[in-house]
Image 1 (cartoon, rainbow, N blue to C red):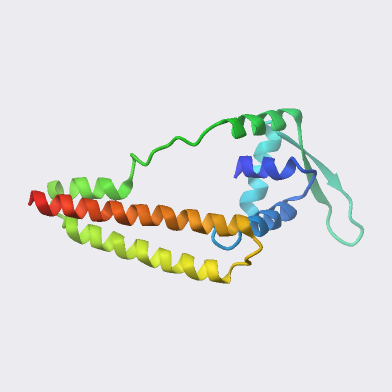
Image 2 (cartoon, rainbow, N blue to C red):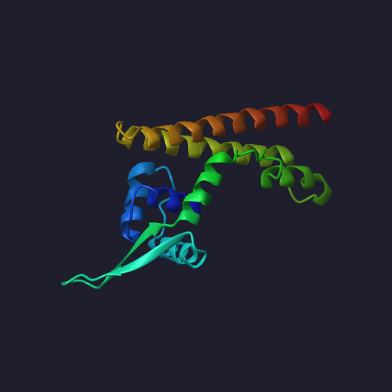
Length: 171
């Protein structure tokens, strides 16, 4: 949440509710909606670390609000983030650990685990398909997010198929 908030503040000052609305509008319903409490806690941490500065703004008929803006250090952190690549392969996969350890514990059947996980992926794909149909077609970012999630799920389904074939051959 830290770096996306910095990225939103790169366009200009904003308060927490504006940032929450901007994230929701940008990413659509497929992305888990941020909790406003989480946003304000994160803003506080960013401010303590010197990446943003906040300023109280008086409002006549409402409580004061705090407007945040990016510092030079925040802009540098943002540039560094954009320079990094996301190179984390999914080697540490919880499902695969269950699959690998099932025979040793005797507590689960590996094919049953695969089938259960497959059903979960298919249900998630159905939910994403419904979201895609309901999402505003003009919001290309949200559409791309949904499409990317569905492509990852399809790859996971293909991998489950491969695991099942391999395990059935070895038994």
